[in-house]
Image (cartoon, rainbow, N blue to C red; front, side, top):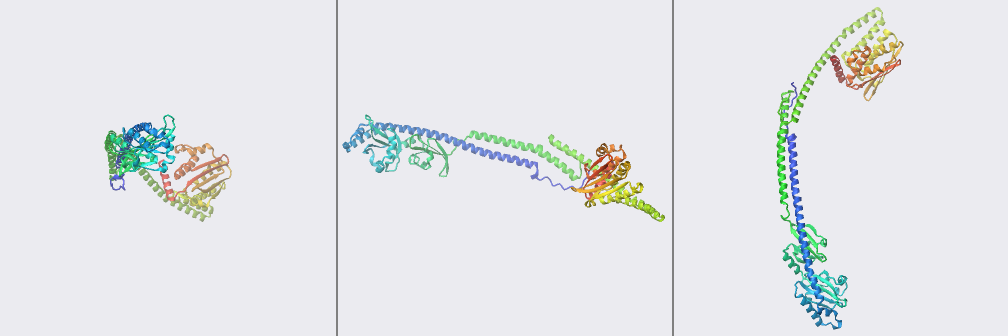
Amino acid sequence: MKFSGVKEYTGIKEKHTLSSGLKKLIFGIVFIVVISFMMSTYVITANEQMDNNIQNAENVLMILSSNITSEMQKYTSLSRLVITEERLVSFLRAPVSSVDIGMINDARYGIMDILNVTEGVDCVMAFREDMIMVATNRFTYDYDYEVMNGEAWKKEIYDRLGSVVFMLNSNNIACKYDGRAVVTIGRAIYDIDSQDRTGILLMNISGSVFDRMLLGLKYDDICIVGNDGTFIAGNSEYADCYDESFNSEDIVHRNIKLKGKKMFLSGCKVKDMPLVILRVVPYGMEGIPFRMLCILLFLMIVFFLMASIVIIYIRDNITEPIFKLSKSMEKNKLEGELKKIDVYVPNSELDMLQNDYNNMIDHVNELIDKLMEKEKNLQKAQMRVLQEQIKPHFLYNSIETIGFMAMDAGAEDVHDALETLGSFYRNFLSKGDKVIALSREITIVRDYLSLQRLRYGDIVEDKYEIEEDTLNFIIPKLILQPLVENSIYHGIRLKGEKGQIIISSKLKDRELHLIIKDTGIGMKKELIDKILVSKREEMNNTQTESFGLWGTIERIRYYAGKDDVVSIRSEIGEYTEIELIIPDMPAEKGEQHAAENIQSNDNR
């Protein structure tokens, strides 16, 4: 089947194809996977490095803290020996009047004899209760006598009742001239015999003790500071990393920037001591889970291979067959034909699409054939209408001639009857129009009833309640006259008395409501239901009056394009009322509907 209006084929734009969409989707998935892989690699590597650094730092800090505690226990034991040395005990027991420079020197020599067996003790200070002091290295310190003569620095020592207290820098009563910090072991001295407190011992441990310890353990990334931030031993560059958050026996970890490099800082306080250990290490290759990263890389390569296979599969089994189908369809369009296509497709879904297209082509061709047949029938109907428009002229001329003859013979009633009949047929035929204004339809009814009165007298009284805005409403021609005729012959005449026919009209929701009411014998409900629901074949075998009413209803249904256009109300022996609902439709469209109605009736 040829058809016109085919546009030149320009091909399918790549950006609109399923193939390009799938490619973008797959590349998007690949991109997301790559980004996810890189982010996962970074996160896993960072977490593993962090965990590795945390584990190493905790091991180092715990070992070093334990070593410092053990080392300080040695000096704690040494302090016990010092406070039991006889010359120092004599110095502490002697009354103030007996204390002289000789006794002080003897006490100092006694202390130094004990210290000669060990290293790392920078100074030992012993104070009597009256604050007379003996010191082994007195001249390397600067003493603050105001603090020394006060009671604040003694309180913590006294509260421990002879147990050691670890402090910094002689508990602030003395500091070294060179500014080096020392760790001080302080304890109250009690007489062995009387258990009376006789003085206070301060033993300062040099920072070199901790330097030797770090050197022996080969820790060059450790810094030992006091709990006030004072540098004591180790790498002094890391002393500035201290803050009060490290004054906790729990190990604290954080990332820092040092000289522009990312470093990992860990620190904790040594138990029961005013010392904080800081460890700073750079991020390196340690802790990177190379095995896990290799597995992830392998999985990503496998994913790339699978994505490539999917792309190839989609291309060979979906997009390329679709392009073939589209090319074949486009070829039909360029050739101006509606014919089936025959393209090999590799799967049943696309084969189903091809079959559906071919079925659609068959259906379209069938519809075109039916449409052409209907067009032919419509043209035939239009020709019949033209012929019918020619025939009435002879009738009009004949009626007019007979009318003049009646006038010449003095039969004016016959002339009036012929005039009414001529007017009726002129409006009845309406120049072949299929739709007319409601006002003309009312004129047809008036002429028809005038003719009926000539035959039956005043058996019928007609009444019109037509609203002004409905007069120009377009309706199918001759829908009132058959209903009025039906009311006379099958309603009013059978009742045997004068009847009334009332025709009313009104507009509601842009629809014309026409009501024809008669005071005849009425209709049974069974007959009403039969008229409203019956098919044409059923009505061919029923009574004549019902067929005429049904035919008019069917014409209105064809015109309106729906079934719900009529309602019939009746009471036996009282009245019958028929209401027609006609949609607002332009005259041109109404003509088309009417012509199609003629064609439909011919096909029946």
